[in-house]
Length: 80
Length: 426
Image 1: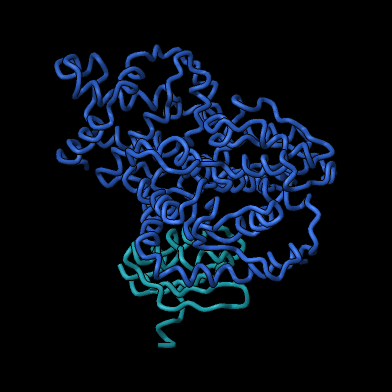
Image 2: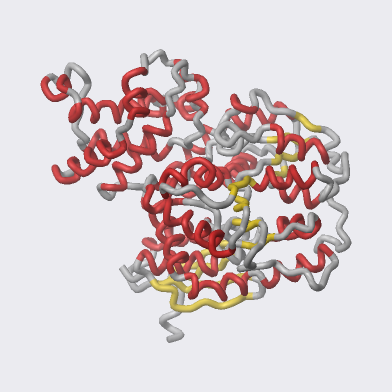
């Protein structure tokens, strides 16, 4: 599992207001191969609902979320 | 390559969207060219595709091809064209690049509304799967949240905890809360995603002793930007249903120009129903609170020179010119007006969904130069504007052009000039 969550791309989205964190994840998802993982760190609490919603509707998957202080960390797996 | 089925579908959408207003616009344009000086994108780029009359001409070409005898018999003579790949590519650029500012409509001798054409263009493209991908994704994510709110309710409330703690500290009231799902509240406030438009309004509502509840949904409507009325209606319906369930008397839309326009001017026609509550722009609500003495601002407390940017959807398309100016002037020691302003103001270049579409980043920078010139001329150090898209765009212009200004929302400006018991955290 630890290997699976090794990110292929890290995005620092701190300071961006929603929906821009979701927009940046969408713009970058094709930069990782299918099965690859983006680690996105956002500071806007709106991203807690935005990014998982985006992942579900686009056929991708948020495999893990965690708090890092006041920031929100998402591991998004490209599924297609 | 576009298929015959896709062409038929695009034409079907055009047929469905054709009404008396469109026929009038198609017929009346004399191609006088006055609109060329009104469009910030054409003025900045000289690209004919951005000329408002050209944007309309793309729709006119297809209309003539399928719905006029001349277009069917002698298409090349009357500039009638099927929606081929070239036309659809042009339609994409002309429609999705348009910020829907409607400045051209103000200058047009016949008041032709270019957004009518760009909306139809977007709808035709969406129908054949050629819409702007990111706008569709944002719309679908918003709908998904609405359809699965039980899954997201706790997450959204959890995200508010830090904000609520700061709110209590700022107003010096440990019992203060951010109400959610409050039945019988007078107002339902629809903020933007995140908390940056929740904290300041919670403070303002608290100080004004307002009876309010916070919506679980965000105001922004990417279905509208996408050009899909069905999606746009679903997104707005999330908080319409919430407002009905709570029995509120008014729905307050945050500082989001297009969201206010959707709710005030479009939703009832889409839904074919009369809403049982009033729609209000938050800037109007704040203005009333100040006028009625429910909140007190410190006159002249903002010493730096301040200017105000009229968001197209709040000013020209929303009707609020003086209310926001009165608020700014109530706290600014040195207010400086941009020229031109009010109904003639230049669009900042970020509306219509463009701030989310990276393919138009360069166009946004170039077409924002009129706004850059205007801001520079004022010598202002602070710019206030009650629209999130405008703020994001002007922040980009500020950074790229070294304007050295601070950009503020109206609600942040109001809170900064209020005497609050608690200090602002460092």
